[in-house]
Every structure is written in structure tokens, then in C-alpha cells.
Length: 115
Image (tube, rainbow, N blue to C red; front, side):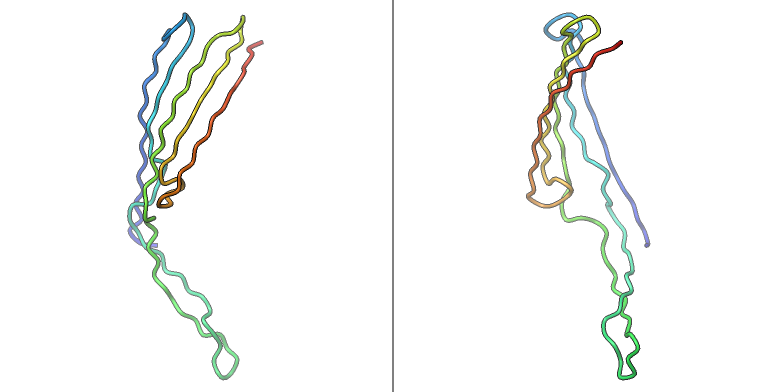
């Protein structure tokens, strides 16, 4: 491998006591880790010669994907009882897994209890 460089970022904001005391509203935008430059040499058998010995061929592969994933997340957490919290979250990924045109969405609910 030669010249491999990667990049990632994430930025978010959180608002405490957004609607009621003890709740939390948050939002984030991110780009998951991605190779931005680099190549890799792959050597593999491409056939056999007249003596039955493998013929090897080396190919240079670019490691940089064709697209860049961007993710948007939002979450809301509120206290529901002494030591208990309930959270709701959603995420939208554009060019998910760095694949051009792939969209991915998810939602979640979490209940946590401190004891």
C-alpha cells in the first residue's frame, strides 16, 4: 500500500433542559472514517502456463471510494422516574458505507435505569 490517507469528522450540539428540567436534545453531523487517497497492489493467479504452473498478475487498486458518507443524527432524552431515562434517536446516512446513492435510516428507543 502506498500513500494511504484517511479522514473523518463529527460535530454536534447538545441543549440541556430543552423542554423540561433534566432533558437533553442533541444533533450531530458526521463523516465516518474514509480513505481519501492511496493504492494497493494485489497479486493473484490469472491462469496457468503450459507446464501447469500458476501465472501471476499484479493489479494496482485505488482505495478511495467513489462517494462520501454523511450522517445526520438527532436524539432526545428525558427523565421518566428516579434514576430512569428514556431516549429516542434517529439517524439518516447519505451515501451509506461510502456507496454512491445508498441511503440508510434508523430509529431507536432506549430505556436506562441507574441502580
